[in-house]
Picture 1 (cartoon, rainbow, N blue to C red):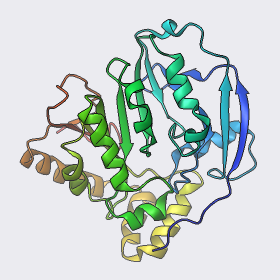
Picture 2: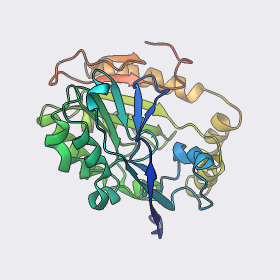
Picture 3: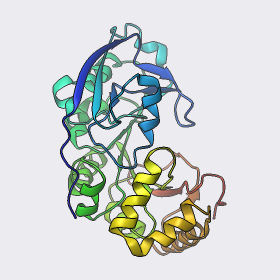
Picture 4: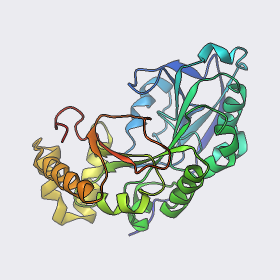
Amino acid sequence: MSSLPKINMIIKEIHVQNVLTKSNLPVSDYSVNPYVGCTHSCKYCYASFMKRFTNHLEPWGTFVDVKYWEKISNPKKYAGKDLFIGSVTDPYMPLEEKYKRTRTFLEEMQGSSCTISIATKSDLVVRDLELIQTFPEARVSWSINTLDEEFRKEMDQSVSIERKIEAMKKFHHAGIRTTCFISPIFPGITDVKEIILKTKNHCNLIWLENLNLRGDYKNRILNYIKEKYPDLYPLYDEIYHKGKKDYWEKLNAEIAEFCNEQNLEYIRNDDSLKRGINEPPIVVNYFYHNDIKKR
């Protein structure tokens, strides 16, 4: 397999009134996205819908707007609030090394007593470990949906799988809560059990989310499967054209049995912070969200 071609990114600096926006996500009060767009160019990126609101003519994955905002003068306004950093961008994409917009935000929020959750596919976040450590109940999650480096290169331009896992280890060892986000799960390709075994000693939560195909990337992914994994295409046709859920129900049962064997709690729709930092992770199933019942 060949990796994704390198893309000449269009980088633009923009000024915004506020980098915090009220969130509709169930896990946060505010979303924080220091950039518009992303350099990872994931083939399955759900955030591509944002292009409708950005006035960009360029394809999603080929541009990044770097946000500048007025300094946050009253961070205590957000005391007790949950902030999710990276809902529609990666706050630690390679450009962050130069522009430091995520780091600037974290510095401006010092002493705010807010809770932060960071989602990334990068190990650049290690640069800010000590800064992140100052926030109560901080959490960092890494998206890992394969242990096959060649498949990963086909899907995105993020750092290697091993670099993600090494970053996860450093945060977990430092006492910061970590999450392995196994998403999106590609039917017949993503080995969920192997990823759990590889990461379970370095994280507090393991989230599972199926591959949802919609919008302009649906055909892109299905065409990719037809070309690269023709034997799997009938399965994808059943799931994504005919709407059948047999595969996810079977996988749900398999993971439930596997977690039982591994003495891991397997539940639905939980975002719990109740467990101790060194206790085994909870495995949380988000397949079709409310369609498949809790075990």
